[in-house]
Length: 162
Image 1 (cartoon, helix red, strand yellow):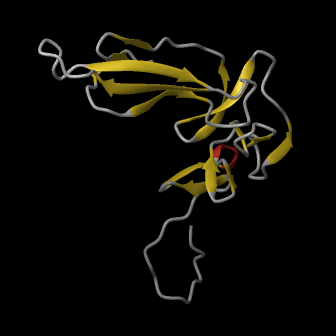
Image 2: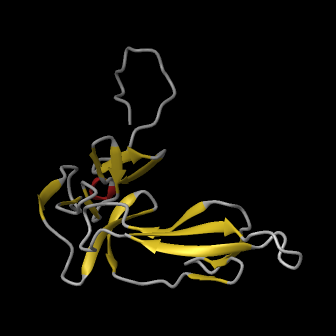
């Protein structure tokens, strides 16, 4: 509310009541405003990892806007991974990839592909050295069969691991 003896010209504006702050075009209690860390906003009460190795975790306390960080790691049995562009602790899981016939591929996400080209395909490999998995690479190589009257257009599959 403006003082009765204001000598300045009247202007339109918005002011929040005491104990409230303007947040996303609304007046909210100051303890609900959240925190900023490295240019990213986090809601009050949230926790987040600061790096892709899950070695430092921060919290945005319910009151105030100062982020509190500490050394941390994923609980035993979980590993640090990236999901939707953010580091998270994930359960170890497995998948099955099928390669058969002349050659048919069924991927880990259960999509079927038929490749008849003369190519080498990577079926699976470790993409990062930040994992507990041993380094491995599985490749499949399609090779054209020698032309016979009954086998034109067929390919042979050879699988190699390293």
